Length: 290
Image (cartoon, rainbow, N blue to C red; front, side, top):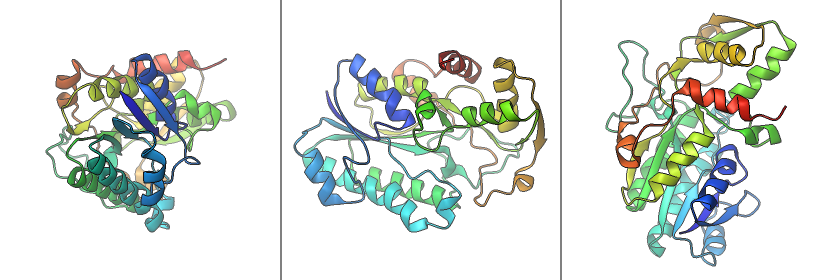
């Protein structure tokens, strides 16, 4: 399959590229300097000569707090850009895969919670969450041969090369080298996900014609405080992690209190679930250069 991979230099794109190639696909890697998804004429000029069978969009505006001050920028990249891609893919009879986020359940509460399924109504409230949810809707409306995949808290080795805004694991390791005590939010439950594991799942998914909306994260769930403690335990770092509330942390944009995703639909299509988050984290830490 000929694949145009948008966002190839990001954390997810960096893990996707070699796995797509290993699966025998002919991949055209595209960075932001190669394509501007917010410009319909530009994406047509770039993609038409490539004649891809599939366009895989892993690019996004993901500065959650900054989006509160730049809603138009977030909407342009996360909604109008995917719509442009969906329209072109439909016109050319190409397939499309678009990556979204657990933040579409931003308005959910932690009380009596259960993992969200693809059939549950979204509840975006912040500007970032709203832009990603709008992008999902536009892709599904404009392109019937599309996969929309929600995931959560991605972390990948490419962050060590400065890809994107970094990731939570690397932030904790960096802070833990300088401090013996950290305060971390303990009232947001989710499932941060390894880009290596997600990439393997996406490679399997695009080999099917089971188009639609999917949830894709590692298995299990944790709070950010619990995740931090496991990072330091496995890294053998003596750092005390003190639980705090979201209100105490004081971020500008709202975060989901509970955004654990039910991934059974994906597991039924690709032959099983992604690995447990403990295992995924252990493999990530082991793969980091010394």
